[in-house]
Length: 573
Image (cartoon, rainbow, N blue to C red; front, side, top):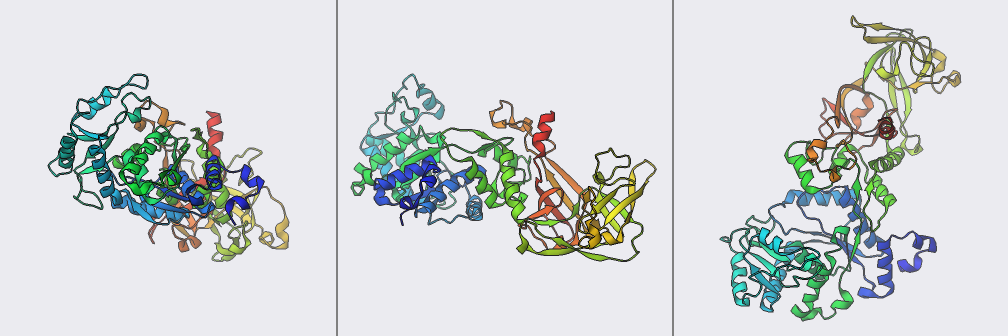
């Protein structure tokens, strides 16, 4: 059944404006009711969550309307591109859960684009300009004042052809010449004022090597590539709105250049623009992300503080949580700044359903159960995930000597402190109720050990365990645990919108964005886990093993806390 026919009225009301335009085109019979989209990343960096929004739209439209979404690498600038980025883009898209129909490269069309450019020169639609980029920019005028024509604008076609051929030689000097389309220097749309369509780049291409020395600009390659591939809907972000008339103009040239394009009007791609994804306390600029990596301000593209998909994957974000977040904020025609707390809430919601509950103590202090038999141990049952019974359970060893969180004990506690303090009872999760009897301090007054007595009939699951106490603490056995390192992350930037600040963005970095806890203890069950397994450290937050982990040393990244404490802290300030 056709998707349009199967949609209920309620589903129609929830369509994004992009999907509504797609449905309108299907209803009108455009492109023979065929749907084909594309995701066209430039392989000059790693994908970030902003790209994920475009991926969800491009692939989602194709999925929802029985179409196909192809992947096309916009590899027109070899000075910034390489195969490392290509491989990681492929991995990230697969990780998000999408499948492409075909893989294309803009470089697949270099021959066709070159032929089109030659045709434009011969028909007076393009010329070689030997002015500097600064001079060309100054001559373009302003949105209210027309530009000044280049002195090379009317040079003979034969001369431009010869120079264009020279541009594609190893001897050509970068910046010495460009090929410009001859359009309209008085057009109020600045992009129409004789845009540059080819420039010289003497860097070997990651696919074509040194075959080419002259490369097309994005605006020239993009629309034609869409048409060559049969794209029906070219979905992109709002900054391309002023580029759309130029996109259409270059496609128009195809009808005269290639008479096989006679059905152009019925089968031309339709460009649709939606708002970008911007997050608080984050930058999305690829240039700035490159700087963070290149200047070692973060620990690589997959640093868990980065907005890259590989960074979020390493931190422990799930692909479902990212897709859920993107779906919740929707698609509009207006740019907005989304609160990163909304993303974190989506992560919590998803991980709550799939994370295995385990015990880990990040700031340990020794707890000795003084009346528990020396050398005795018990295996306590721990439910893996109370949200999903099918996840089963595992056991955790209980013994006389335990580790608990230092913050869970207070010697002189206020009335509403329901954790451990002298004379009060608490439950040790999955184990017994204990009463604190005292503590031991070192010479400086620091607490080095806490003593307590347990109630033998209060074991979880036994009849006597129904006695109510107000506090429940997690723990690990001191003799049956594993030492670990835990990396805890905060906002990478100190201000809400670093992209809008005029200061050097390096000055806005949060010096406390990474805290390393090197003296942590986790239950031995975690020795079985691996990076990619979602974990909840009880009462603390969600975590994942880091790839830096070795058999001798477990390293965990904190994904997100159990609650949004950041908003509360900001209100205090």
